[in-house]
Length: 367
Image 1 (cartoon, one colour):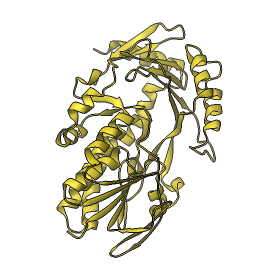
Image 2: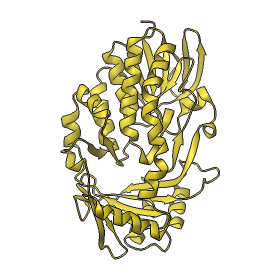
Image 3: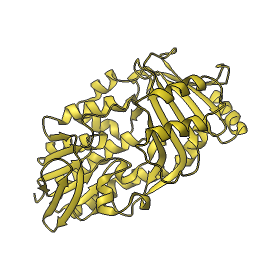
Image 4: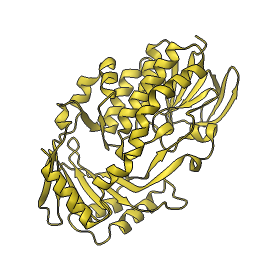
């Protein structure tokens, strides 16, 4: 095979899955990760649909189920905490056809599966790429430059590889009209089996029991904020506090936690759209290629896409043919998810009180 050495930027869900399957198919993957270690975000994600056979083939399903959150149902509450609707979750406690677990747990399980078969380099990042017909010369922030046959950007919504190979983020990242903030509460939830949701028009506040350490989430509607730096935590705190000022239920208590936490995750809910996921010997996978963000099975699609890319590279000698086959295989899974974001947002964060009432009524009528 013409391709042997592959650099993967990003050690998250897509990057670790890709490293596992490339190594299994006889290639030599190197994974570089900007963070000093595996990221700690405990945001719940799902492994379901076409990602389940990938997990089964990796032999990790038992570990995924053991790490599943304890949530079995979603309870919609009013400002006084009274339940207005209750819906059972299909991935309840890891026993169903879907598995809900913390993103950090999923990434750790995938890393453990891949770490003995790939080189992982933490606390470093790609700063420059120079391609020629035979390979890619890569400059790193800390390590010495190296040359690879291919480079894969698996580095998320704000991908450095995408920026270096395809152009500015603003050309491909599109605001979906929502923002999300999450933080760990540092204590168990009062209801360890139930996700609590509270809505006002255009706003959602939630408490998720996770797996012992409850998680608070804020999802709210708003236009694109000019010059928003996704690393500016002080500004993020102000944005969330302003958006939820005067809101009832447990929101004042949760905002107090927002004001003092050192581990607030905040970002715009966005989609990523590119006419092609490859540029020469560089390609993208996961959120870097086709983010469907908060509402569209991002982790499952990341696993599925990484597997599709690894399989295409194993089956085709020419990398350009492999990249085309990967896109032809995986793009049909992405398009309906991106189209469905607006509909999912209408259910999760209704714009009006009438919309909230209609959503709650529909939830009560579910089996």
